Length: 187
Image 1 (cartoon, one colour):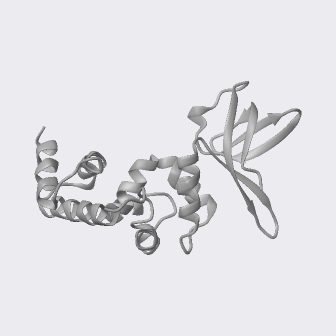
Image 2 (cartoon, rainbow, N blue to C red; image 1 turned 90 degrees about the horizontal axis):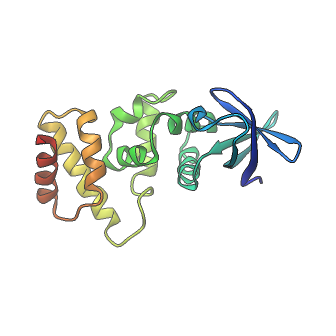
């Protein structure tokens, strides 16, 4: 398996990059054209997908992005192309927050994702994306409660998402986290 490719950008498009590694060109499915420029030296972490009729590489800017991709493709019905598209549309932190808080609307608006797949992603990955610690399960449950409370108060997912990201670093009971979230939203 090819874990990463390090070389010079030879050419690129909106969904691929050709990396020259000592005279050999690797075509990598890569969805971050904003990070590319011709002649730039770079390292791209890769996932090698082997199918009956094709062998392809999917590229990522960081190991965190790669790790989330691996977890996404473990979800039933989610292939590498759709998982890569998800990662091209949102940051790793935003995706993790959406999964941990059960924000089905955020996930459903990703390319190629419908209600059923969005629900499956949350079902399969909730609690598995955060750092493992003693209170990770309690924390994700508390954050889910906070997000639900904010939704019931009439806040939109676009307003809730940034607050939830900040709350992942906060400590306190569910009530305290709701108060903190409300104070952030009032600013």
